[in-house]
Image (cartoon, rainbow, N blue to C red; front, side, top):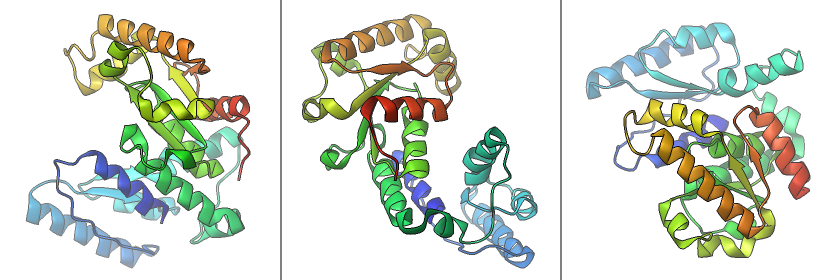
Length: 255
């Protein structure tokens, strides 16, 4: 279910046609072999590697599946395992654990995750009145992972919006956000770090150039300052720390 929600990230790539195949309760070696066969078949049919979004807790089954030729988005290795290392506690991995731990708030968290994925990167302005926080900042400053963490861990409906050249030219936030100033929080980042991150995606482009990064960040910070928006520097902060700052500043209660 969480993996299915994360699958909505594919909506960021509207020019690529995806065929979704769900393999729920893949929790035995036999089922892993079935999944590996399905991955192989998909590769042979389409000639490209499948994208596999997985939430397998059992590390042996997880590693076995990863022997397949696919691009894996692993919920446990990306979110759960690093959090366990930080807390010094081994995470529970049994089937259905999420239901048991989250209790009556489980559906609220799933609703928050779906809301956040649907409102990622300015995908839509519809329903912003339901958002508990709206993150703004230049492209690639950490808005998406922070938003998803807030939704997954705390059941917070988090939207995020990238500040783009049109906003800078206008010198103000887009009209759709102006009625929600009280729940907007900004993220900024050091130009050198942004240059490095963007260069991995679009090397030798104006978008990734250090000079452009410096200009965008300075303009974005000025825009946020004029709008009375608080912000935090994401350069050396973890998403856990950023989330704590955001909830404290906006006085958001955990679910």
